[in-house]
Image (cartoon, rainbow, N blue to C red; front, side):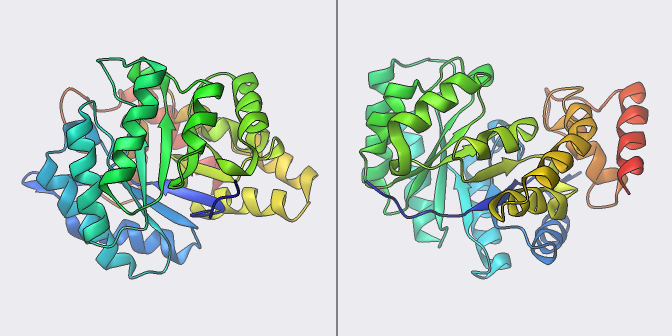
Length: 293
């Protein structure tokens, strides 16, 4: 079953900027406009990088609707609506459709660690709550459960399943998933250091953290691959590896928010229990960023 692809190329998992009062929508608009000016292919709101775990439901709704209004249809807006409570995931998915989001990013339930059958039922329930296509999101290092290749094949049978964000640690599992699902479930890299490897296996792009600050380069990496300029794509992936590594020196989104603050996009305010990037890691990260300018 061939599916409609929500986007092909680079999507940015947007940071949520805060000020002392709450969400800083002036900064958020600035970040969105920067992404659009640099040709990004899609935008993800309320994902891991957006500190979704510490956003209230009302804040999530406001962020999604604001992003839709700010983007004005120029690229797909993908709303992060997953939860560890299926009812909440369904309610947020229904809301995202009502305010004009283009698709959903639905993380696997976290903490309570459902079975693989539970995952299939979870995504079926989400699809019944909303008319929007959804991208399943497997990030076992955070949630404690991963979407196994055979489970991905079962999820792919859902007509609204339009992708899988693979943020796992096994390229073999990625290959098995692509082999089983083929065009029925487009695969996106969820790790910036594996963009090219996943593209080479048949992936359709990346949902990226580092594109918050280098959207043009991440989009270019995907475009080079799609245009068949493989040696240059490989060189660019390699050139970006120091930044990939630097942005993983502490848990995401601590480093990327520090980088955005350094560049003047937002304040370096995180929601507890996240803490500011350590001074030594700040020095290292800013040095890497400067070397790429």
